[in-house]
Image (cartoon, rainbow, N blue to C red):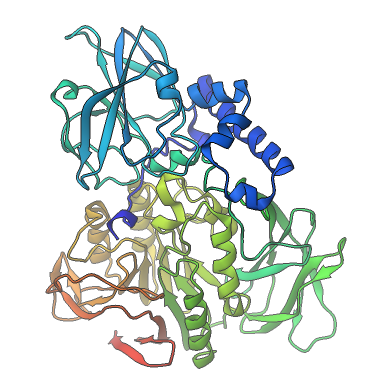
Length: 593
């Protein structure tokens, strides 16, 4: 479980958009080499051969030019004086990076350890002043990327590092307690050889291990795209009274898309033109490229049921007609679903469908993160949307980013491309990352735990301060009330705002357990919801939790049971019911204003 609880690296050194213009060629060189290799593999190997490819086969397959790029253009920087560069790779990696020995690195007897007691072998090489060029982590998919420290050849000489590729490199001190992976800040060094103490440590991101991963990396989606639209799902990017955002998928050959819509029962329909963006998942062997389409219908009548279908006029392929309903003008009562950590799991689809049948009046669904297992693998998104489609095509889903949606420091690129959400979040964040929306007398504030906390704190304060909603609900992924405080910065940044502006509910996830706190204020239990906020976490797929103590501020705690939670708001009354798949009720709670 611990290995899943990753934090973020705000600087995102792997993000292409942050590269300094002086060294942008380096990443392009590795990327171009990968494209060349993968394209030739697709042209000459069967899918079964790709799934079973070995390191020796790759070594014999790549060209000298590609080998050079893989050996030198992955991680680069300048040094002002002669230095000793130490590369530390996990001893469990069966095949060390091929370029280490070829480039003159020598394996020492030194070992570095981190708090999980993982061991790293130390390889060293002397470099003159100038450019240092290092290679890929290997052709396998080994997640523990190597890290680097740099020291002077002449003791006492000051070493200055500059012109980093990737840009945005942070520098730590090589000592116990220092972090080595920016996407897992809880993981720190525990044992450092005396000879390396005090040197300049260059942390990295575990996700960089996939930059040239070929062994075990070719994948297939269970649900390949075609020229017929599928995976229909709704979101809101505008006013739920008068707009509806409709999204769907096709294969890469379908370049156009429209949504037809009409009031339920009408004969004639209107048409709104859609847009699309292509998604290339290089290692998805059976469906590498697909198109994600979106059409936003505007000018709708509040409180009205509409029928719609989507398709391509050129290909003449269409979905079946289905329905959505706009928000009533002033709904006296409404309900919605909440789930978390669904992880592309078919069990969530079964649970969701069962509870939706029980409460078909639900207007929408909110998801507090970890929608998929691995956010950079498109097949996971195909599964998540396929299993959820029975509800998602008729009820909008409004999600938050979880650590699995932006896993291993790779960013939430697929999530941000797939979901079209309100563009009213912090300007410093990418669109669809954090946002707010309202339904009835309730306002939702959705935050991204994998993005810049400071920018969201400033934004959240402004949004809460001006909100006139009767009910205020904040949603994000990492819990700030649990016996292991893995995200103390979030509690410090957002907790006081939640207290000050009296947020009613905070919906979270991540810990894979159902918990409900007593009303909390300032980190302490208070007498009633009039004086504090109730914090919830839930899990919506089967999971077995380890034994650990129950914090005193947790009022309800249920282990090992997946729930879909239905929340009903009627004026100044809020009721919550947690359902199992068979309709059993695990928890109920109510509060009144």
